[in-house]
Image 1 (tube, rainbow over the protein chains, first blue to last red):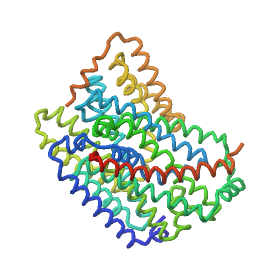
Image 2: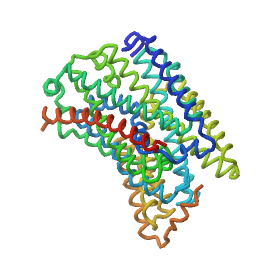
Image 3: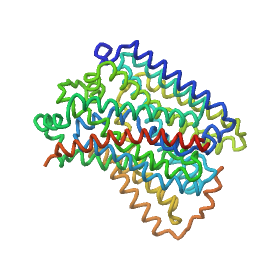
Image 4: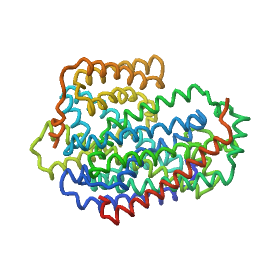
Length: 474
Length: 40
């Protein structure tokens, strides 16, 4: 799709981009005023309440993938595709009790890296850092790239300009406001996304009934209604485990667990999961309506905006532009903040300058955010456009970390041999299957191999971890 | 075996109504937190 076929005129796109950019940067500066130390900057003072906590859990998980890939999943994998996508919310549900435990065991912790270092030692920590940085940077680059591509497809804004503006805006307000700005803007972004999806969904249903959608699918693409659609059923397991691995290991979620006020984390992640759960269906069914509405779909990944623009005209195009912009910003800012905190705490503070002052650490975190932004921008500039497959490639890496984290949080017998072997063997087996069989089994195999090794090591271990050692994080 | 129109209707309308309710719930939760001084 190019400027000629964009659903919105470029001048309207630029106007929306300017308005929302000014809003996010203004709020970032406003909320950043109270940040005096690294703890304020990285963890919003460890005092985030239930409303902001729930919204940030949901908004961060609503990426452009959710709003754009959900319709594509529905178009390619049918009803099961939408249902499969909803299983990604299980990561948030299952992280809810873990967030309570993390806050209890590590009241002064900063990052998921702190957990690996204190629980399993430097060897496991090193592997974790390689895996998580690879995954986080790939996700960050894919989001920024998706931003440029989507803004161009929706409004004709040139790719480089769209990508640069959305990345630049997120870097600016994250640098200035830290996690407080990220969480505050997440709340507004989550409400905008929810309202946008509901308004657009009911407007589409005002033009075509579910009965008409069903009749059209039964006549033209019956496979999409098939209860036994094998590829779609496989996607359920892959999505579920990918979601669990991502949420369990990534500092994006751990930093929120540390940032929430005591007693809030469990409820906030459970509510976040409940908020997120219906989004893939509410955003995805629009694709199933394309046939009944006679909308031509030249590219599956643009089916959502095309149907909305066809049914609702410029109003719908504006709504989808805003929803996509908010979805992108809510994920990019979180990744910038969490990855910057990980590098500042785990690398700069723990390896380079253990005696650095809180103000110095805050300053370093801001420069690291800027450096991450510049790095991401440089990688995105050539518009490779194939990073979705790299994200699937990272599936075995995140899947292999599920069991070391879960057992490490709950079992005293879980040990470093299990964690190191589980991550290396699981990721290795998963990657072999990724190339030998396909992406859809890679995460499942990695998680299974890692589980067997970790559980066997814990079973045979005679050592018992002292939980008090996790409280040493500060 | 295929998904019926009735099932499709339930999950689509259910998801949209669920989204609308969570949006209202989130706004209400923020007002409650703000009134108690527990926003952050």
